[in-house]
Image (cartoon, rainbow, N blue to C red; front, side):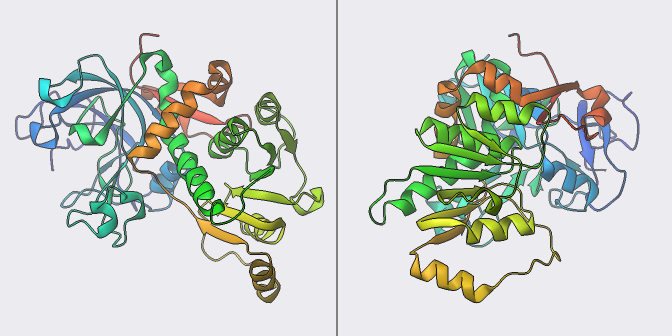
Length: 371
């Protein structure tokens, strides 16, 4: 049973006599397998830091793991603990770790290839070349939707305590921190003076991409289909422009385009509607099998003659967590708080996965932060 009870939450020890705790589990590939169950407490072999979970953010990847068979349990197990967006508080920290009891922390999601490829060996596990990396709550490692977890210090990031429960936004912010870093690295291949950025999608990642664009002093435009709810106001509160029409219909030629939907037609739009020397960053993961009419010859011609760049970006390494923490610290707390449209106690976890029209970011509350 790998430390898992067969059903129910009454057990305080597993069949091997080990103490247990609650966790949100799923069997990848098995429909309707999401449940709040009892699992074994983390052992010291998992890391010298012991952390209690305060909150877990939910995103489309979690839904894919639950509904679409995406995800992979740890080797030798058939159950995966869910949750990669996370916030916790240190319960145990040996002196040599550099952490203290009570520190507010976030666990880093991706861990390197066990036989490090050159990128992983250099700390660039987000650029792993072998695909043998692991990811908490997604691929080969249990996630953070459990009462307690352990990790080594190099897999944990300390947050300023003033961030409080908003620290649960750190992991999604790392995604766009990396995207912006890569955009700027590419931009400096030549003369670099961007003025306008277009962001497609006003979900959490799109809104955080817009936040980082506004922090850079750019003219930010965000495109989404909705006309009501919090998204238009959140965009305008950044001093950005909200569009509910399509990117081509706006006649906007952007220097930087950050695509956050994964929708095939939107991807095609951002690849064909930009300024010369433009940079297109794709962060949305598309479904397989969708077909969109696209003149590849015209796309190639525009890319070559315009010195344009289209690239993909996923995940983040440690420096992106540091960059994200700086971005959140510089942001307006009230604006960040408005991103979290629902906070659901985890004993009502099914409600958290109900799609509601006004949802932006939904968070499972595991324990109060004290703020």
